[in-house]
Length: 143
Image 1 (tube, rainbow, N blue to C red):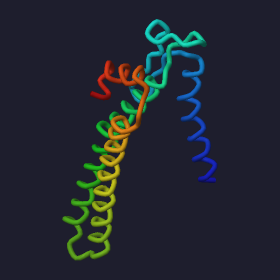
Image 2 (cartoon, rainbow, N blue to C red; image 1 turned 120 degrees about the vertical axis):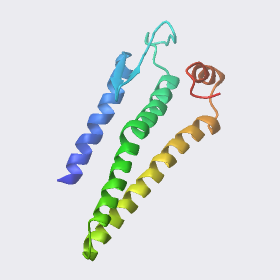
Image 3 (tube, rainbow, N blue to C red; image 1 turned 45 degrees about the vertical axis):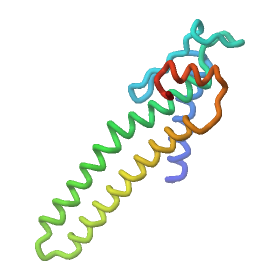
Image 4 (cartoon, one colour; image 1 turned 60 degrees about the vertical axis):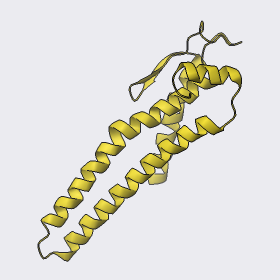
């Protein structure tokens, strides 16, 4: 059942990302608006979405999730783990649960920063065409 739920969520996320690009329309996800402006980047199909638009969206989505969702949740779980340890008294199982909660939150923070680092490094390392590089520079993604 969980496998089916993950597949449905994955398919919904993929459809949310791909359909507007195929329709060459603007779309907003996580508060990030991707503009497919035909005048800015004309393509043979008449739309304005390019690979730079998709890369910009990925970069902005990782930043948004890291800044506004993942880090605050990790800090909250660090605090919850600390409170569990402080209120445990002589209960060793509660102390252990608090330690596990704090460890999981710390690992989560590490994963968040690793994801941000990977996305940022990919933009710097992966060779892109000069047109895509200029487009990403104009959007402030790369320098």
